[in-house]
Image 1 (cartoon, rainbow, N blue to C red):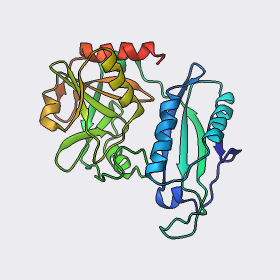
Image 2: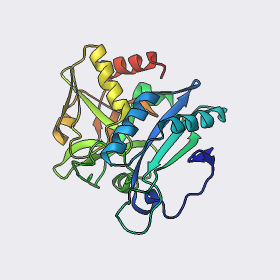
Image 3: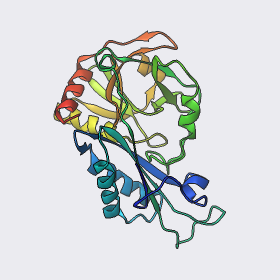
Length: 273
């Protein structure tokens, strides 16, 4: 099902700035067991990032109503995608004050990841395409995903679940669709996202779970060498949860599925994941 501004529709105005310029942002929310997981966190990020992009989105109640309508139409678990654009305007980059934001809510099948991914880990690779840096846009899940599109199309092997993106200094930032954590000497480390990357909802949940479990967690620069020297590595996002990394195929680096990753997986399951 697709709703555009609350109306069942699968076409958008050609002048919409989300289409013309990637002028907007999005959220990906899992609907499972009759619940939209981490809904408040997703909506809080959406509203915060609209303010950062100066998109005058004020339709939170209407958006919640749209989500309820879409969920009521579902007969199975699903992924709900929410897109907010600045709205429809004339040609050119300038956005007038009379433009009203557009909201799009759509449902999609929930991917079915094998149990082996969670128990034995997954294979990942290094991407050659570097991630762009912009301190103003860092952390935001905005509609311009060209870095991720180009990086994801570097491989076709379905046995490789994810690719890692690096900045121009060779530091690990994130996966094409996930955030990355490493474990070293009992400490959790995830990449600083002050210049690039998406501050994922699951990334924040993992940090909260780590605090509950009294596991040290830190945001820091992660060099490729630090990644290779890690005791454990895992990737995460709202759809797949926490997946241990068992191998980096480019260099045949092998990791064990460690106890800290397992602790976090178990804690996440107790939240209803």
